[in-house]
Length: 332
Image (tube, rainbow, N blue to C red; front, side):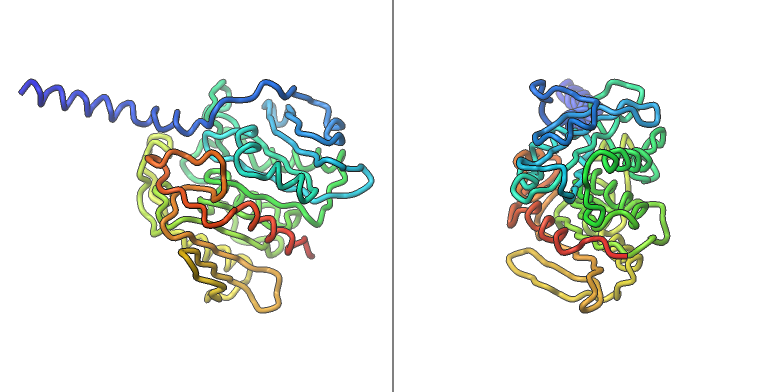
């Protein structure tokens, strides 16, 4: 009887501590103190990696910005925005997914904006994006934050306005869908990885090319739909997701693509479906990795398997997404 009582107490403590343990595990590493924080956007004209603070909508916002080596102000460059996952940060994103290195190799700007804590008025480190899903805090307008940030960057930097791209992971992928839906007249293409679309829109200003990547064994975004494995990720609530296919069908519809896809390839557990008309650059390229969990293929800091499932790397997602972006400049 005594042992049974102790076992029940242990289970109770575990149930109470599990949400906090999971949230803590999703806080990615420590922040660097070697990079000074600047507020002058003109400093972004200097090649290097910059940590920037800016005041937008009465909130102190941060982002990391990479200006590639050899940049000269007279030449316009593409820009990629990378949106981190829940619990991530600008610096964590800059060091984890290979986009800083890719910007140097391919010569483009890359910005890593940072979300605000669950309570925007707190000093918490668990940063999230308000991507318009119903159970997220709505005390901050991250759509407007992105718009203002892009406007400010365009004033100072020679950004190629036909080649503005957004990609992101997890909660950042949800935000990528949302931003693409709201700014399809300014964004050339988007590439969300490991999330679904929560955008409150029913039409786009213009069709928007989408590269969408997910794993079939993702416990946080169930491929066939269902409740999340760890309810605490949804801020203490059980969240029921629809099948991933609903997001694919939605964006194929928004882009005016045929409902039936073309199978581009299906090899070694990687399946690529293309929704789009032949010889039309507008497409939804839907890639699934059989058996992969909540994971960005090729990232250097994968999440714990106990939380996010298997971490498979059949290819480098950053390389594939950049190749997709290069094929899709903004057309009007």
